[in-house]
Every structure is written in structure tokens, then in C-alpha cells.
Length: 170
Image (cartoon, rainbow, N blue to C red; front, side, top):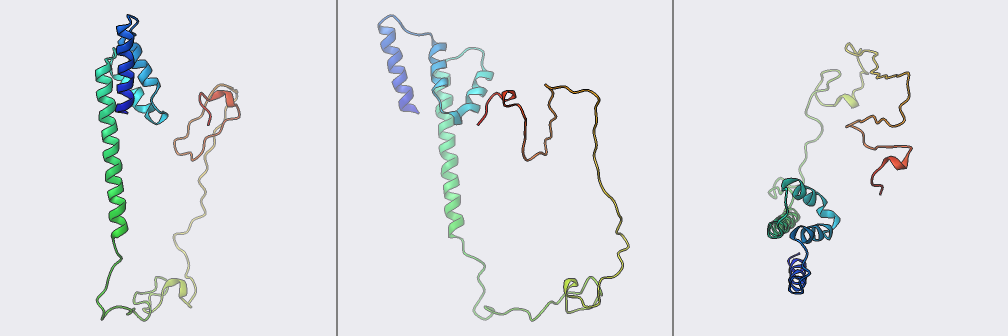
């Protein structure tokens, strides 16, 4: 990033020496447009935060963000390495290989000790709290609006029959 910024700054200096130097806002616009798409949110935040662009402010913010991302990547790599080194639970040699000889809890079906409800031979008792109930949602309207959208924040996928309704389609 800093190498690209230095090259851009050198080019601007050469243009100024030739008396055809661009304005500071133009240089900032070129720099912002040349950033990768992964920096889209950073570009948007910078455009919204200031009314006029300063090349030095923009460069310092971009370098600070690059340092922050590199630091976050370094911490993530260190965490991955630490997680890879951790061994499982280790028992002393005396306890290794020992295991209880069957369930020690009580059955939730018959109340006897020594087995679980899934293995119970006495069958299932009556279910007192079981109700026949369905949850249903319904919505209706008389008109049809072709340009309206229904938003569902809990949806795992979004669909639309008209591809032109999207600003960006991947």
C-alpha cells in the first residue's frame, strides 16, 4: 500500500512541476478508486466522515487501517498455532482406559436406576403436557405492487424474479 501511495505522490509531483498538477480532491479520488474491493467499506466510511478530502489524511488513515488488518491477521495466525498445539485431556496412567460400567443415572421414564429412558423396557407413559397445536402465519392483500419488497431479517436466502431489481449481481 505505501509503495503505491509513494508512486502516486511522485507522479503528482512530476505533474505539478510540469504546471499541470491535479487538485488534491482529484488525487484522493484516484487513490480511493484504485483500492481493492475488499476496502469498499473503508472507502465509504471515509467519504461519509469528511466534507473535503486531504491527501495526507487519507494516506494516514489507509496506512493505519493496513497496520490494523496486518495486526489482526497476525493475532489470528498466533491463535491458530496455539489451538493446534493444545492436546486433549490427559489422565494419569492409573485412570487411563477406565470407564464406568453402565449408566449411573435414573431413567426419566420409570424412575429406576441403571438405564436411560431410551433403553427403558416399561414403555412410554402417558404424555400429560402434550397438545395438538400448530403455529401458522398468514398475510393477504387485494392489490399487487410490482415494485415493492418484503424484508425478512431471519431469511437464509433472498430471491427475486427480476434481475434488474438488483444494483449489483454476483
